Image (cartoon, rainbow, N blue to C red; front, side, top):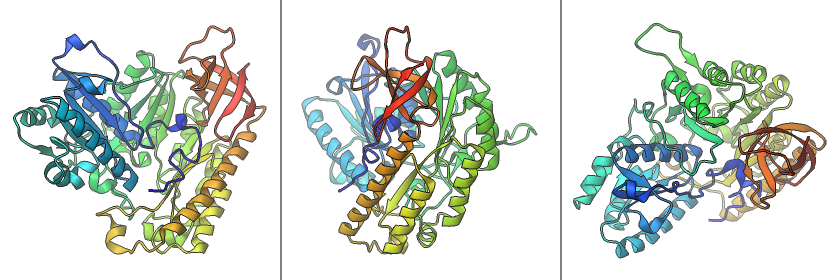
Length: 478
């Protein structure tokens, strides 16, 4: 599939590792400590990568060790994404490659995890015989038993969705971690029935994780040396938890956010993703008064046309979204904003496309994730509407919004020239080991020379911005 935005229009992938379907394998371990080894590749959203860390914890508890080396693995898992057709094509290609490897190694098992499990289980298991296990996102606790079934020659499947499962009692095993930043899942599922989206069908209904377990996990991460946590949910602003065993007041996302921030002023807090209809002034004011809550919001717009937004079942208008952007700027003038944009949705006319362009210009996004519409089986849009926009038109419109976002991103970075930012060092720059790489509170990547200072990953430094590209700020330590 043609996709101009696989790296959000050439914006630095380091801002969003994992989100665009990149694969990773677990860290290396002492091979003698485990009887069997597993390998995981994850695709799609940050939630999938967090889920893979839960899977690793479950398997490790049962005596399985993680490995980076695909060839030495006894179990190969691919954690899948169904959000776009391209992701499914990538997964299918990888499974074909795994099958060849399996033919060379007797006893090797291949399993599919995550969002593609339910929809394509029969194809994977029976028609194409690509896998031995298929496990949905709410069934990871059953993995050890399913592995045993598959080892016995059975096809092992569990794709049941749950109204309760949050994995709140499982301490994730951090896979390929930089030791500085970590994802923490605070909720699962989604109740927003956006007509283009498969998430409610693949991840089930929304449920919030026990707030105490979230605070405990974040505290443990900080004690282990992590300096940044990202709170994850399909719609974090609808987080709501009340302990059924006592009469304590319910905990909203704003309360949770501040509670995590209070663990230590040295612990940075980020979150993703916010639905425009749910983010509140209480959340914005909590961000504003806590220096260690990063001043950055991912606020997907999807379309700038009220008519198309209604077809998408986004439950807000163009004007309402713009007023939310205004409110963010009013409370936090220095807040970074990014977005998701879909072009070529069903019945989209040229004037709708121009509305999307104008709302991008109005919001002045720092960066965006942009795609043309890909009809997903089982969604409301697939059942209700005709995917009637010709692919050349979709491609042309996508190219136009990509070009606009490229300009907006460069303009945003130029506005930061001469400014100073507190930067959390995440590691070496990919291009030059003599440079550090880190991010500002606004989620912008900043690269700067190491010089002769004694600094390490996880240190905070103040950086003066001297130059920029479309994707990256360049500077020097003050």
